[in-house]
Length: 114
Length: 112
Image 1 (cartoon, rainbow over the protein chains, first blue to last red):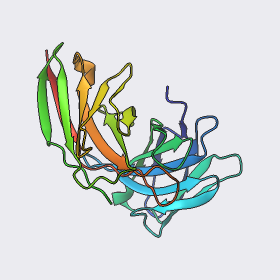
Image 2: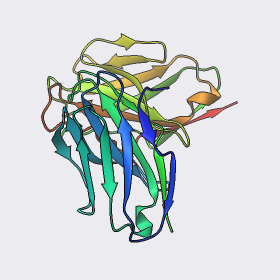
Image 3: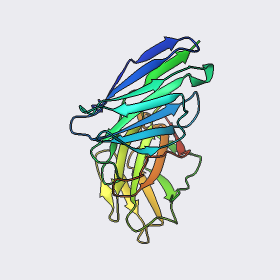
Image 4: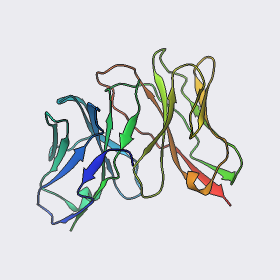
């Protein structure tokens, strides 16, 4: 158990809908990262937050948005869903934003768009 | 961004040591070398990280070349559970635009 909690574990929704994925970081971790992994694909970095502020952005679609709240949990919002958005979404957390500390990953949310 | 080069795949026999190489010739003097792995159907898992000196933990050892242009992840005794994709990643030390970006990694197969 990494200490990073992602909910829900599974989500099935229709095209055009909007969903929210939630991530609770490990206690004391200030940085949160979001990733997308499509079937048999690599881990695509989406976005990183540190203590409530956006710190780095990857290939995140405009239909996707995220935020980190004062209690440090984070949410990834996916809207106007398409079939191609079906993927595993992982969240990770670390104490700091840089490389001095390691990151720990949740078990992911499997999103299926039908 | 400093890049890493890893073999696409490697194979090992169970209970034998495994040396997973990573080249990072453009590493900066302050980049940390991180290793993560992803087992099938699971989230990535932190393995080890270091800066200049060799590092050991319960999972593995990290050997860093003196010039820091390469490193090797050592699994001392491979088990079937070690079959995974292993990622070598360079990260600057401080906060700022320092995303944790994964490349293609090395797919390790362990043969019983």
